[in-house]
Amino acid sequence: MSLATVYSRAQTGMEAPLVTVEVDLSNGLPGLSIVGLPEAAVKESKDRVRAALLNSGFDFPTRRITVNLAPADLPKEGGRFDLPIALGILAASKQLPQDSLKHYEFIGELSLSGELRAIHGVLPAAVASGKQQRATVVPIENGSEALLAKQTTIFASNSLLELCAHLSGQEILTAYENHITSTRSIEILDIHDVRGQHRARRALEVAAAGSHNMLMVGSPGSGKTMLASRLPSILPPLSETEAIESATIYSISHGGFTHEQWGIRPFRAPHHTASGVALVGGGSHPMPGEISLAHYGVLFLDELTEFDRHVLEVLREPLETGNIAISRAARQVQFPARFQLVAAMNPCPQGCDIDVNGNCACTPEQIRRYRGRISAPLLDRIDIHIDVPRVPKDQLIQKTPNNSETSHDVQTRVCASRDLQINRQQKPNAYMSNKEIEKFCPLNDDCDKLMDKAFEQLGLYARGYHQTLKLARTIADLDTSDTIKTNHLSEAISYRQYDRLLNK
Image (cartoon, rainbow, N blue to C red):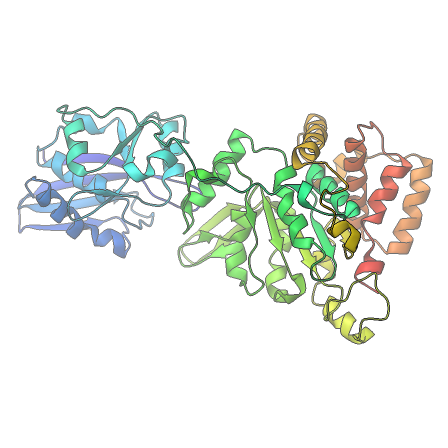
């Protein structure tokens, strides 16, 4: 029987569904047809496969070849099916033993010479292959990425000929090991470099401890971008599961995954001209956007008021749910988007400092329209609002900063606070539900009176009220306090000054 079966993987969002490549040789006019909902790149693989087989010294069968990519209703795209199609033809024409294919899953694009070329989306395919207890065969350039899926054995090959020698038992390939001895040095941005801004540094620590979103308001050059870029350095290290999920998103993105990104919290800072699709993802074949690339990391939006209002509104749902669903006529894809939002803006169109009086030529109406570019529902989803004043000259010219704390020092406190939260409710404080807030954020009589005054004076909505309690809980955790005290609540309220920063 001239029929062979080869296993491979497609890509649908974060998933890598199994694709069974069936190759049948039959009598009739010579030709090769591919069925099973192939896209243009998959249809073109017949020419790449034919040239690769002939240039590798194999015979291309002069028979009618039918390639079925099952399941038939799953769209197939890209050059990842070149290798399994070629191996299926060789097995069906008895040039390769069929039994040697059943314990592997194959992914890779072929050049006309028979060399294997790297593809995107190898990591989720390798993870899925490991769950089926099959080894994964990938191009050599994808070996390091595939090796992150520790549940499967990885074989990396340079060419079709080398792989066939392994499958036929002539020259056995050894399981791939990471041969990278050195990685590109990554610049470490330390919070020790920040001069002054003690209140902003404290707010950054609170945001890191409880995974709270943050908005900084200040004039140009006051250090907002510098502060935001230091946030990843004080966040807790990624767990193995989080690192795999973050790497998977980059693996399926246009930019791809690089080994230097492993275990590092993402920091994404899109320009204010970015579109809504660039932020949330999309396209005819949905790809992750900036909010998904910032998963388990930081999304920094500088010049927040310069973003199109409709672009900012698309952030409201993922800020609440932690994922984004992209719907198209033929499919729906979900990407995770559990990011920490840090935004920065000027206090007025001219960017005058908020602590300098008399230097702003903007009229109250101009300031109102400027700040009105950001909707109240979006602002209400940002937990911390702080002002970032100018740094005094004497602090700027100091050779050694007054505060000698490094990112490691702050990260130690943040990790201890985060451990308390995980042990208590299995999640950071920012993600607590209303029932969990009632259970873990009780207030004594003095705190109740203080909260009543804040509720009236700040005009808090229900979401703002609950976010203030979450902030107070985080501050208490940093203080290793079992209960929320008046000083904890007072500090939390000071981070919710809508009237002073945004609505005046």
